[in-house]
Length: 456
Image (cartoon, rainbow, N blue to C red; front, side, top):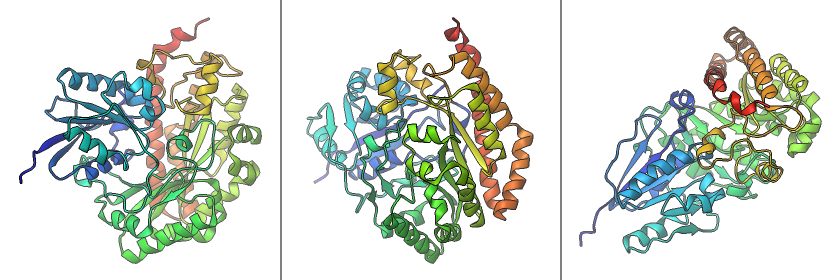
């Protein structure tokens, strides 16, 4: 019996305020969630991914349209969903923003998927085919065993880096983070053999492990990462990769050497601040335990393995002052961090931070959903605790000018080569610094647009 064929269109929307970085092939990754949805879709469906990062939106016929969206891209999602709803095509929205703000999302799309999609999508497709779509879908978090393989063949070929995820969940409750809300507070692990099978099929020579913390906090997590590295080495696949980890990974030199042998070139560390009291207020317990004075030892251990350090720092913490921002800048410049990500504290929906600042009436942009595009970690969207908004903007500009000065970045690559003895790791770090330099330039161009808001 021939089954009716259907067309599923999956759309990856962009934030139109942040155009530069979104189109840099080596700073962006394929939309893995859409690849997973495509993999979950039955074979009698034709699936297409329309990726606005690479191609401007043009209306395409479909029986069903699905979107994934972060907070900064959600209002673009709502605009595109309106086009399809006008044409009587059902629209679905999933992802972290819709999961944190389901009531809002329900005003703009036909179906909202809350949480992780694996336990939901098969039921949703069956309901659609029966003409019984529900408005809201929510299921328990899935096991990560026997996960479907993402449809990598549907990703745009412009991506220079492939992506893979091996764990979900986080036991920490950092004030500015919603991962523990979206993915749960318990680590869930994919079987190592399944990870390796997917890793081998990634077409790119560069790969991003998109786990929030690849190494975890336990000995079990460290042993599992070691097993992944050993099997990558045994597979003979010569890819280069980077990952995110907590600072405690720098306390395991043996694991770091194994990671480097398996192809690791750079590790993203959420350092956040150079002040112990701020680490406590953010609930960055591992960083506080290690101690600011010993961060250098962590960097040194990573470097000895031949791996670069991408250090993430935050401007605009509750106790920040102009002097503290300048001090943080000097710390970054004089530290052995190779690449620098310096972002503005952003109260994303679903975080403890958002709830607190909203209750205190300190959010500057609340014309939702339009203002969600400003919640992109480079724009100030709340009134700081100890600074006026314009004062913060001026100091941030001053600090960013120092951090991302092109001459300073060029000198930094030489330091990285000396520290890691790896020109490849230095190239990865320099590429990241160029990316953040471009973010900085784009943000400065927009600053003039918002000055009126900060006038007394």
